[in-house]
Length: 220
Image 1 (cartoon, rainbow, N blue to C red):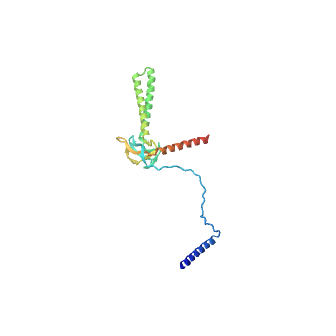
Image 2: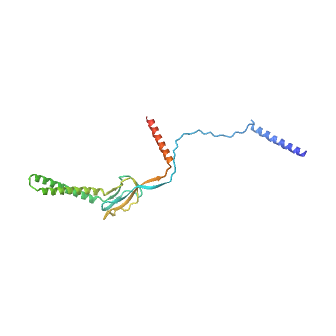
Image 3: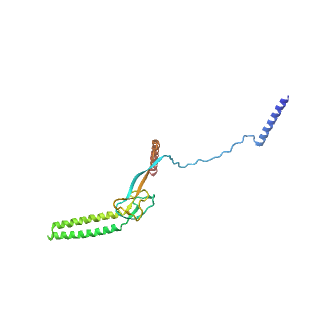
């Protein structure tokens, strides 16, 4: 009998709790969780792939002084990126300008004498050997003038291609090119090499072709 009384009391207590809970909710329905709503967005997605690669020089050249003279100026910062044709070094040009002027004067003199010999040969006032002598003198003077132009051009050392230039090997004021070519600096053009899966390469190629076709269709 005591056990029955205890069970009845527990049952009544449970019913009281249930009724109290229903009274607090009011409608007697379950409590719904809150839901966050987000609208979808459309934006371009760029495919990328992480690869392990290596950097190597695709082109490399040692810049040297091809004539002798004192280095006048260095026109770049060590390790800088330079453009093709950019002026890098200047070797004193004054002696080569004077040499060019002297050779030009010698050519004018030789040409004038050769023209005079031509007039004399037409009058039988000189020999053919003398005429050929001055022809040879004129041609040699022409060659010397062209050579002096080339040497004057060598006073300006420019970048043969765009790339990264290393540390200068000679400072301004030093004599270069005496007894042989003097290395001034090294210019490199770097290229990155990476192994890529064939299927990824094909997919990239197809995507590019589709983009080209879409652009052509839009232009039409």
